[in-house]
Image 1 (spheres, rainbow, N blue to C red):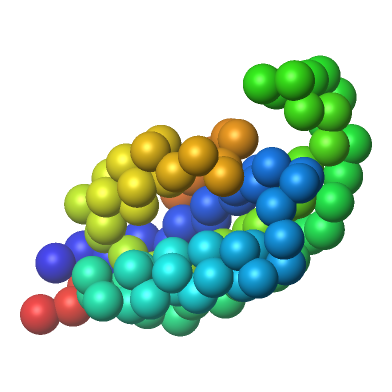
Image 2 (image 1 turned 90 degrees about the vertical axis):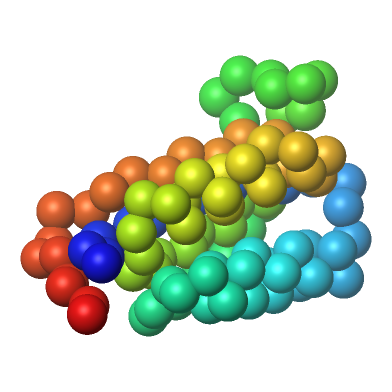
Length: 103
């Protein structure tokens, strides 16, 4: 199984509470870990003004996740984020660092 380095940034609605924010962060961290992801690091980027409104929101709470996983885990993660009403936008990019082979 070939694992790559990924970075996912997602934007939360600005009106959610800190408890919901932390529960979402913990949920996605455990989601990646349970599906075989490694080296998960999460950074809260805080509330920022959006350059254009998304779903009538002008601000958003940014969260960045860096992890090592395969493409199937990324697909499951993005599908979960797509159906979450608290997430306004998400973006996953594959980083150019060396890939890891796990047997």
